[in-house]
Amino acid sequence: MKLQDINFEVISNSHTKKELISDSKIFHLSEVNAVIKEIKNWHGYKQTPLYSLKNLAKKLNICEIYYKDEGERFVLESFKALGAYAVNQVIKKNLYDRTKKLFTTQELCSDTSTEFLKDLTITCATDGNYGRAVAWACQMFGCQSVIFLHEAVTQTRENEIAKYGAKIVRVRGSYDDSVVQCYKEAEINNRIVVSDTSWEGYEDIPRLVMQGYSIIAQEITEQLSDNLPTHIFVPAGVGGLLCCIAGYFAQNFPGKRTAVVSVEPIKSKCVYQSIKEGKRVVLQGDYNSFMGCLCAGEVSSVAWEIIKGSVDASIIISDNAAKQTMKFLYDGIADGKRIFSGESGCSSLAALLAVKDDSKSLNVLNINEKSRILLIGTEGATDKEVFSSITGHKF
Image (cartoon, rainbow, N blue to C red; front, side, top):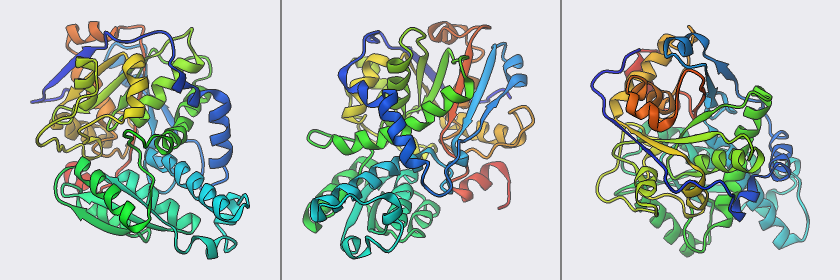
């Protein structure tokens, strides 16, 4: 259970504010309930499990530890499946603009809309899981997809996206390079970009993606009832899920403020660096990491507007921490339960294990024996080859 040969850093956010900004209204319960009503109609929807890790909490001298396992989210084994809500809404808007008819999701999933959707193509750039969610949604709702992958995305992840009928385009360089190329080609080829990151002039669709993620926060509050966590550790990436969790709890529980802690790889620390400098920072150079789905050089602009005032602290960890934690989860660290967690999904627990013996970090995070910590495990074994290489499991 003790991590070996790792590095980590922790900072608090001196810019955290108690008041809410206007954009947080997208996480109000009325908005979230509308999203839930839609996604509950999708085939295979169910709440993902939230495990109480009593034995681990006792070992770490923490009151309670919970693990929200998004590895059981639909068939995609990742929270990113919920971002497909944006695909659903974009298709419906496109159809309405052309036909003046409001199509239901059931009609999208039948032959009713085939004639109108055969020439519609949705596109995005991805580190892996989000692109797979978009391809899955496009196949489910009846349109085409083109997914852009940067050079560090593994062949296994490419194969998982392609099996949902997506056309794959490889781009030299980083994730951010693939975002730029995706947008350029979309303009030329009349494709609709449905991205989970935002930039100036492109904000409405990323908001829809984040609203899809808000189901996670709603499920957490239902599963824990009134026993809300004191801390939530959230893997960051471009910041969509982090923004969603922070915005939801700040909006709906202002009197019971839960501390939200971002988690990133040391090499891909755009949230950490932005919090440190008090402004969005663009990383330079190589920021690829073993935690592949967290590799981003810049925080989404929409997400940053909430993150900057409602995320309480940030932790960056080395790749070794994630590798060891993947193995720990598979071996049963979670009270003997074998959890299949991917290289990014395990990062929330990896961060907690990294800081557990460092009194200075625990003080910064205000973690003590009374803390109730919730860890969001954002993905299961979405790259089977990598998972097997770390855990020894044979699929």
